Length: 120
Image (cartoon, rainbow, N blue to C red):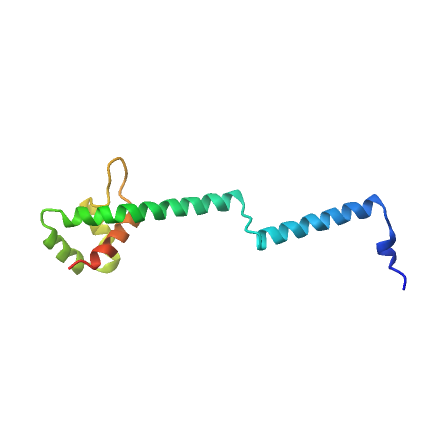
């Protein structure tokens, strides 16, 4: 059996075609299965992880500030009477989700409200 003429040519053209096909295959496999990411994707993932870390660290502090307030029982009662989707606004307005040198963080307030939901 003879090989097709397509495979018989040993020119530079065939070498370049093989290199291009190999490079494309490597890129496809790398991004699909190899865990490669673009720089912009990595930056988005880092920003998301940073925000999650801040929320995880600051939400307990917010809940502690809430519990240590002068009228914590009344505040907790008012918070529990508020609709669940507005509880973060109550926490932000009261200042419990505001930390020195920063603006109030709604994600921290939401996590704080979730933590306070379990307080009796």
